[in-house]
Length: 66
Image 1 (cartoon, rainbow, N blue to C red):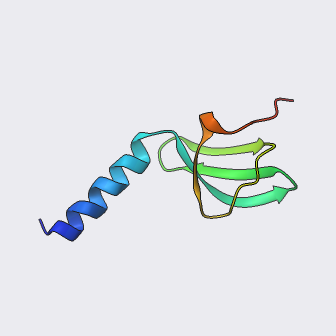
Image 2: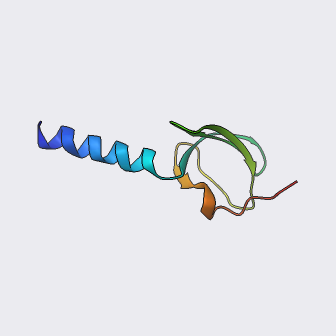
């Protein structure tokens, strides 16, 4: 396996193995649609400002419980 492909594979495994979710869209102010490759979809309300396309550890976000 080529070194570049190996780096990509390791990066993908690291992203999928932890509780990181990718922000798909900001639904409303401070309400976000998140996606995890194996765990599925989450919609959260948080005090944090998140960026679409970025990956976040869901346990480290300040989620507002309703």
